[in-house]
Amino acid sequence: MMTTDTQRPRPGAAILRTALRRNIGAMIGGTVLMGLYQAAETAFPIALGLIVEHTMQDRSLGSLGVSIGSLAVIITTVSLSWRFGMRVLQKANTTEAHRWRVQVAACGLQPVARDIDGLKSGEILTIATEDADQTADIIEVVPLLVSSLVAVVVAAVALSLADIRLGLLVIVGTVGILSILAVMSQRIGSSTQEQQAKVARAGAKVADLIIGLRPLHGFGGNHAAFGSYRRVSTDAKRQAITVARVNGAYAGTALALNAVLAAAVSLTAGWLAFGGQISIGELVMAVGLAQFIMEPLKMFSEMPKYVMIARASAERMALVLSAPPVTVPGPERPAPGGDLEVDGVRHGTLRGLKFTVAAGEFVAIAPYQPRAAADLVAVLAVNAAPPAYEGVVRLGGQELADLSVEAVREHLLVNPYDAEIFGGTLRTNIDPSGSSRTLPEAVEASMLTDVVALHRDGLDYAVRDRGANLSGGQRQRLSLARALAADTDVLVLHNPTTAVDAVTEQLIARNIAKLRRGRTTLVITSSPALLDAADRVLVLDEGVITAEDTHRNLLAGDEEYCLAVAR
Image (cartoon, rainbow, N blue to C red; front, side, top):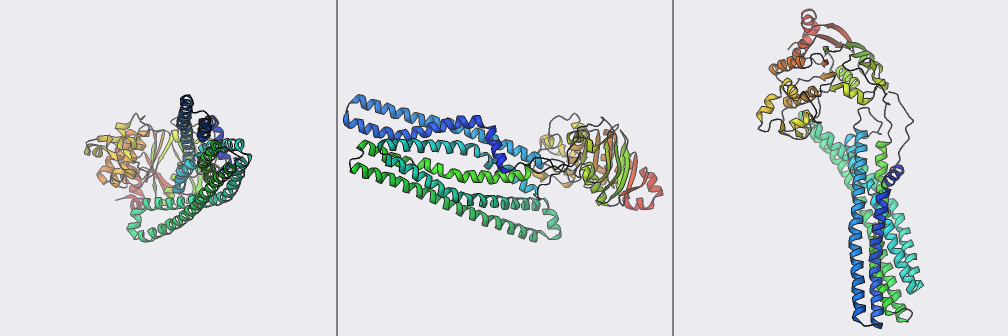
């Protein structure tokens, strides 16, 4: 892996262009259908005017039948074109939003960190949901904009045929309305972007509170934390009110201007009819078009607002998608069943750490300082990428810097002590992909069998989000079962039994040693049971390995070790 600054940025405009380019076919089809819908709706008042004009000249049942048939065709066209046009556009919109959600989530979940300008996980969640949806709205905005333009053009042409002044009035009025609203939409875009940022920060804050609620209650810090969230949430509320006011002013102005234009067309047509310059049928057509034109004008005038909202959301997504990764993964793959070597690693509290776990060996590390254990786990889990530390980590003889993240994940699993439990069932938490061949053995080895037997549904027992309906020990054993069920070549466990009783811990230690026999296993722990089950124990003190032997030999000959691990 190598650091890079060469990744081309993906600004909001580029994201919108990508969305449009990927859906060009659906947009063309939707534009044609929605244009047909608007043209048919425009044709309705035109047809009424023509019917009135010809009925006054030819009062026959045949003419009446033709008129009714024409109106039926127009109404059918309006209904079908709207139905299928919106179906095409909304399907494309939903699909595009899904693509961006997946892409943002993939960036946010990458094990190799990205420089995302200080965004927290809660903010990334908001970007992957609301911003992705609002960005994809551009797929509908453009066809609706074009179809509304079609309606305005058809109305202007029809009115021009009656009297050129009516057509010019519609054209000039439309240009004036859009010019005014375009200026107002700029404020909507900036206000919306600021609101989305503040809402995302509020979401990130409440996510942090939920995660740390128990520790906060423990030392009485919950009131201060809630006060901090209240301030952030209030700030977001104020910005939301500002955006609502701007949107309200925009909508009110658009409605008022459209009404003024419609009234102007109606009054002008009435004045021309009174003067004998247009016929009664043309007056009926003009008044009907003046009433109808308000809908496409309203839609047409709202489009700049939605374009600005989509662009603001796209700019937010660009913060994640254009952020360069800290490292660029290499192309190599480790040898299967290989060893794990840490050579001269300096990171955090680690001071040139060196050790090797041979293929098939079960090794335990007894850390005297918890921080050193956390730093080692960060390096092995690739949460701290190779450029972030000195030294080399080798997996199956290959340096981590030369391996793809997928290859590392396939051969090396690092299970943290605070692994997440997800909403679902026991089974889906242990084997998310449904492909594990060692699920029963993993359940038995982790001593999760009593939890499975306790519930009538067994492995299909429902688990709430974050394992809220499980005890701390049950959550820990569930996490351990998931790690064992993955059956990777190299498994690293960090404090896997801190929340279980001593008897259960003894059984788990023996089970892990038995299940992982012939597989490379590294356990970072101070548990005597796990240390005793290991082939050898490495003592990690002040960032380096200071002793190496079996657990029992260290107990007999190292007083400091005895004080650190004996219970």
